[in-house]
Length: 344
Image 1 (cartoon, one colour):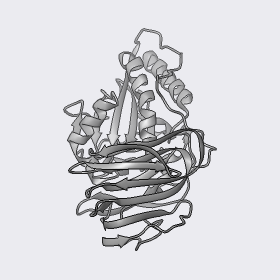
Image 2 (cartoon, rainbow, N blue to C red):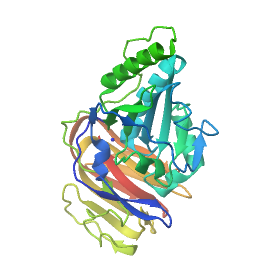
Image 3 (cartoon, rainbow, N blue to C red):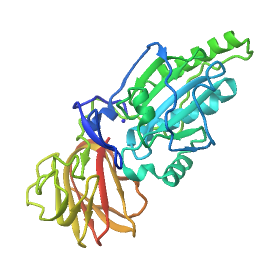
């Protein structure tokens, strides 16, 4: 999701209740960076579940009028979050010169289907362009997409002429936007010069693709193959103890945990999560219905505390240099829902 490399081939994601499962690329596919030019006709938005920042929108109504960025994303994805400042900057810079951005919010987890959660997240990230809830993966499938994030550029004629997977290539993408806006101006006879400087949004974070980091780690039974001290791929309650020695990139849980399809929820106080990781930053997708206080330790040293409440992505560790460290989380009361760890 970060200029990063795909590792793995497929993951299983829960598409929606009653619809079963779709095979997608691996969780780290969202970390891939690939871009290039192609030409094919646009695909229309299909079966939207709701809209943010607009009452409705279609791609067809924009063709012949606008250059369009179609951005597939989901709000708890760290890779998507790191692209948001650039997309927001492009929208603000070019919206009066014929650019429209349409965010396609395709959820990875069930809580991301809730429009109130999506609205709050879009406001938090300063996203004011139209966002379509794609809860049934209908538009995702119409585009043949398999990755978070992914951006398609559609020209004035309605053709997809550029496609980028993952983070990075921001200069290349913006230059293509500028080129397409120039073409639009020529076709429509619209005046006005298109700025050719490159956006450098404040606070944007770039991740070095070559740096070693741990894979994305899932807690739920659908994808918790790296659970080291319990029954992986098994729904139900497990009483677990963290061993004295932990292997790298293996997840360990301590205490009583209820393992659901998408998450693990502690049913005992003083529960524990342990994970020996490689990377610089640690991100945690989690939530709690009642609020769950946690204490964070890095290599045995206290590294902070916080209360997990909203279902979203939390930053637990921020270091200046990558390395290998032992992360330990103590949960002081029941009710923490842990979904994933990701690393940057």
